[in-house]
Length: 248
Image 1 (cartoon, helix red, strand yellow):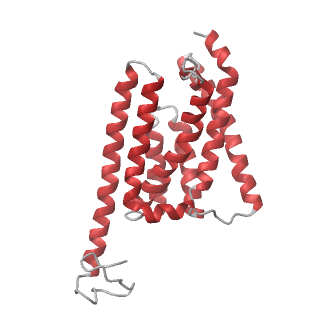
Image 2 (spheres, one colour):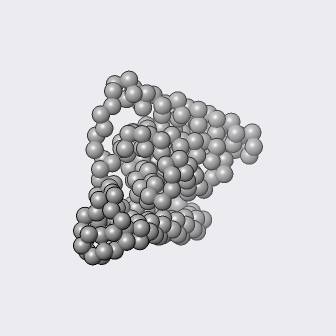
Image 3 (tube, one colour):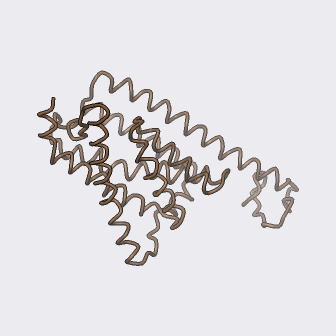
């Protein structure tokens, strides 16, 4: 930690800055307020983004709209990242993980993907008498499979992990306990998907990703799990999309 007034390095046992005399408690409170303001700003910007997205897609989706919306999301996340760049960049170091743990990391998304896909399919049919298929949203685009993979399996693991387990996690963990941080980031992560039914699996999925990010201080495990999970779900949607078409 450094003094906010004169940038002098401060020791853990110091109560006042040795150079300018500023209170360490005041410095800590200032830093806490900075983190809190960033968290609030993130929430507000994400809320505005989601509201805008809702109205944009209300009139139907096109490839151009999709590219613009995804690009805005990426730019927003990168913009927030620069406020905590040094701490976030450390999360991209390759962690030392034993082979058994890495095997588990690879296995987890296979289990979650199949459970989520068939579990949500059952609930959608039982509750709403309809089948949901994400690939159908891209079927009218040129090179539809490419765009589906990019927007479903590639972008979310990279930028959602950066946003929620990177920037937001760091800011919340500076003003709240680790357990509260994991729960809050998972909850917000689930809310931004705008599906009440999906809360049943996205929230616990977010808890898992948050725990791994804290335990191993890296985004890579979450990115790998997130990517494989989304890719498998997309593959299943692609495999069954002709059946879904027959239901319309």
